[in-house]
Length: 99
Image (tube, rainbow, N blue to C red; front, side, top):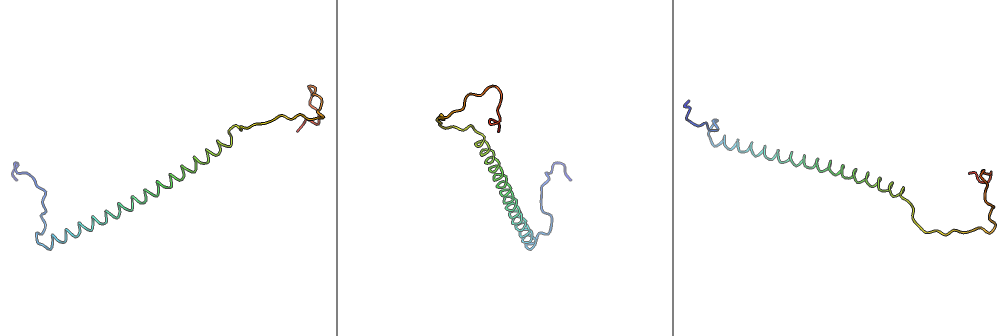
């Protein structure tokens, strides 16, 4: 082999038209199979992403509802005085003041 001669990538198999048609058909079959596998992988990835997104939404929804439930209540109120109010308590709790 001559060192100055460039190496070319060539097909050194049978050079008939039937061989070329066969190689072309095999190449097309491989391309179609690769397309279907790629589609399948993308669909599986989309399903996994959807499951993760729904889970994320569900957790955030629960956290927001817990946060809203623990927030301080706001509103208006009016103090009403009883007509027969009890006398002020001494320092000791009495039996009627216990829960």
